[in-house]
Length: 291
Image (tube, rainbow, N blue to C red):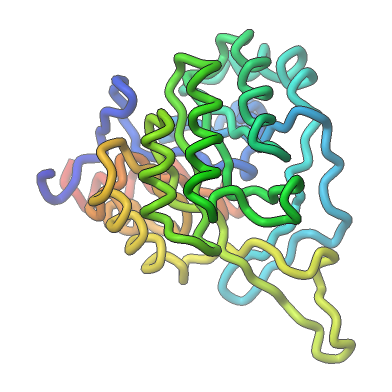
């Protein structure tokens, strides 16, 4: 790699003018941002999670802003894969940038079941397999904690699609490098490092958690050094591209993650505050990198 890293990227055999992906759960399926003309600077959109059956999500309140970030406990709310296939993907096919579909499952087998249905659409170039979502079939543990389970999920998905897919790993337990290697062994074309970190906010007056489900996912610019370290560790351990996710608030943050070994960089929380975040980050990066 040359330094400073270039903002132009090659990922999954495609040339991208931007390394920025919109992180799952922060832009729906991209159609609202398209309507608002906010997709300038976006390399690709990663959709909100899609499960086999519709999910209502967790009871509110499920979002809480903190002094340094955001707690969220959405609960993978979505209308289910069949509704997405019939009603949402035909619209998302009109995006000016590639689409990756984030896939969630409640069992090892369900990930492949969801992908099998989505294969009927031509709207997307690939998938992000979310093994860091709750494993309902195993008492609420994340699939990504166990490399053997990651291997099984990855193998199952690879059997039902020829499209590339990334496996989204968890920072909340287990060995991320071992899980990344298991994902690649199972057929993954990339790994995403990583999902949200566990966090919580207590009301000291009542002794109760503000978020109904108590523990939530935490995102924050303060997490950047943690994500950089994990990107570097995983990128030096696997041969497939690494997609970073978490901690980005400036163009310099993106360049730092690219320098650590990321091929593409996801942006989420900043996007929720500033819909034009991708264009702003691209301007910052080009000035810093002299492009």
